[in-house]
Image 1 (tube, rainbow, N blue to C red):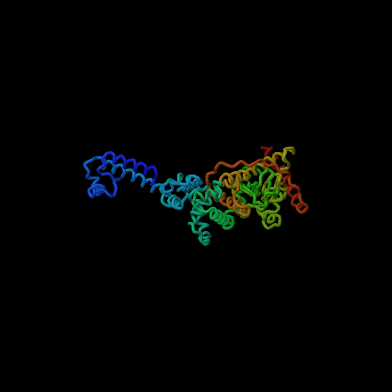
Image 2: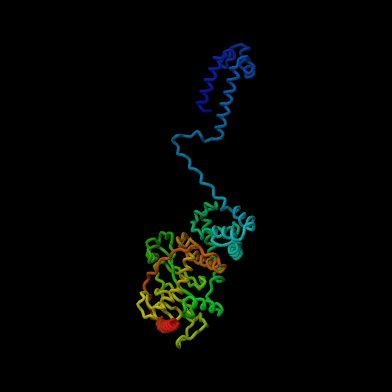
Length: 451
């Protein structure tokens, strides 16, 4: 019992003796039997004086308060020299628990109007509920085979939330009450499945005539240039940090001044990617990255032959892609005559229209980074960076195919690269490309001038 409380009880006893000495609790043991009997609690309560009853009432109240205080705060008596205990971390938000997700996805999902329901899911996971269920159903067999202790749909939701909002593994772990290592492991598993199992289904080179006709007609309506089937561009994906053994390496420092890995994509008129490549650190130039890609090897070797051929001023023009001056001019890749607008009227007109077609891939990359904000500051391990980027591209295509609303786009820096040089092994493609480009420019200028 607290020392101050003992002192208070002692003072009360002395007060009691002063008010009623005949019933003193402090009387000696040699007193008579009457005195001894009076000293019992029963005799105190039956005394003619009001003091004993007053004393026991006050003492009982004080004793009850003291015991209640001790039981409610067992650590109240502390060594003043001991360090204060750390406060326990706040409990995770109930909105991110398995139970809350299950309630959101099963109990309440059909009670909401579709626009409200899908807006809610986009704010949490970056895509609407129907697209989310598509992803879950396609990944469920692979996730189930991994013997993951979490439900498949919850694991996918957790990863999508991280990709959409750019959270680190620690932030997601604290919200979901999971270990950060487990969150990283699940992220790696889901992004790997997206990048390998779903990539062939949702990222395809347009080889069928139907897709070629649809793409070339749409680009021609936009640019007045015939037979464009896609637009190519690269983007530096900023890394949150490099591993310690790579910090001193300049190979990841891109031309914009930050550590990154390079993403190369080809997009169609719907801003859907039909080729994705992540194989180079940020300091690599676009031309080198392109030459190292599977697309370059397949097209230059004749493995891919687009059969929609048109005749332009005596030249047989197959479908081609367009890019800026950082890419090499080839028969299957048209680039501007120059970057400063100092060419002939026909050449300047061609350059303007070509860059208009290229704007499709620029907008697609901005959408990609705006929808999956983890790509604005990639906070995964360097070894897992490529699969995470490709996974986001797969999810981007799913959203574009489903005609999901386009979010605010991320701003991309202006292109500042130097014109690509021609390799000795590419001269045949280059000379053929020069002839085709001039024929396309002259035909375009004549056609538009006569209107």
